[in-house]
Length: 273
Ligand code: 2HA
Ligand code: ZN
Image 1: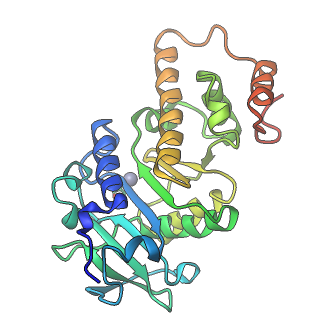
Image 2 (image 1 turned 135 degrees about the vertical axis):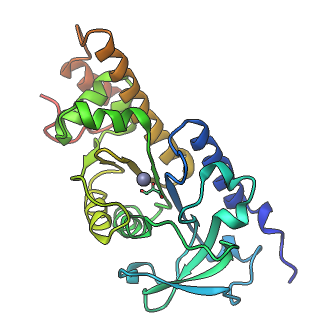
């Protein structure tokens, strides 16, 4: 059967639109940031012959939790700025091999490129999130500016950090009632940071990397983008509040509790007094 042009695929268009958006927000300077998007075979086959693998790219970690799964990912060293201009150079569509030790490239990364350097954190996070929510499909990393700045000035305590964000915008508690996880500073691109991120992703959909950026996970691009931009907005407000001389009054715990009840969300246990 004749295939439809891949650039017509909704998931390719979404990757192009999202990377462009993130670049314009200033959260993905140079090659900063990466996205992985889990696809079904049914979504891929109208566009690609999935029996035709271009090359096999080894992975230095165990991907056996994702055998046979398809992903579209951003490429290592690629600039979000350029994705929409040259999608087939900057993006790749992959399938995890039967032994979980490599990925087969089905489309993209035209110039011999490889998937994002953060593939361990992405794939390990997908494995964690899929156990909690079988519909989880997106993992997104970027260098959201105000959140990154806050990791220098705010205590890196999950409860304290989460409570500050909840207090900065009324909607925050509703958007991420489980709070924000925080890992220690670790070298990016390593299996170690992948494991630490994935472990936090068992409990959170947002994980902060101190002095680096943020990871988000969820069912679709809007959910994950929405999570990150809401937390980032709260961090931006925190920046203004600090610059204006600090907090004089805030949303108190009783109000946060009323908010949670009104919106039917459960704040992380023990985070409200
Ligand atoms: O891909 O953001 O964390 C560039 C990065 C690494
Ligand atoms: Zn990064």
